[in-house]
Image 1 (tube, rainbow, N blue to C red):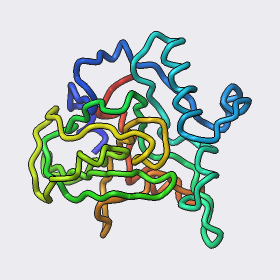
Image 2: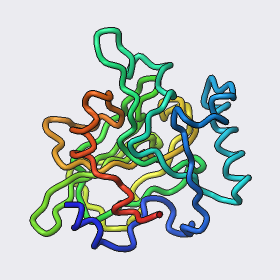
Image 3: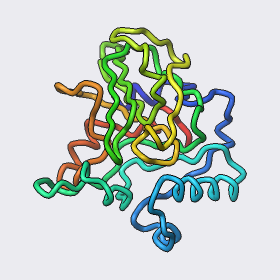
Image 4: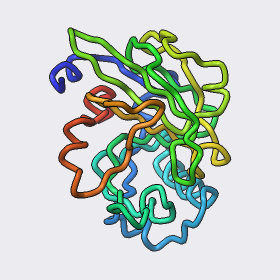
Length: 222
């Protein structure tokens, strides 16, 4: 499947008018010393930090996060329930950009499912598309959307590659994050609908990295 993705060109999942030259990498890992020195307690603090990175690099989009160990999730019981392992390995790719930005379908596909995952630190409004290319079936997940994006959506709706399908939400609906798109590829979705883990534990890292290939294979940002 990785070979299939490498052969697909010109894939974008946010506003096509933003050039890749206006993207800048963003490190949110536990090894980011600058981030560790800052007090970031809520979405407003985090949005201020993101904006400072964008301004410093004269960019419109900050991206990154695949297979990144993060401390961002410690505030939420979604990732730190007492009876389960801590989940802190990010298995999608984040694109940090302003709320209201248009989200595009990565490839031709149909709506598999959608949901408003309304927990602190969760996806908020989420859409999953199902794709069939060269006899291979897989899925893409779009998280942290606006409520309007799913208000009139129906299962089975078809979107073509690059077609506007949603907009990004703000902190009031997106799990209390600075605005961004969480984009993820999923090979086997099992019985999940409207949701799929975007963060895993260290013990399950190998499974999830295999089932959720690096989105940059499609996006080719770097």
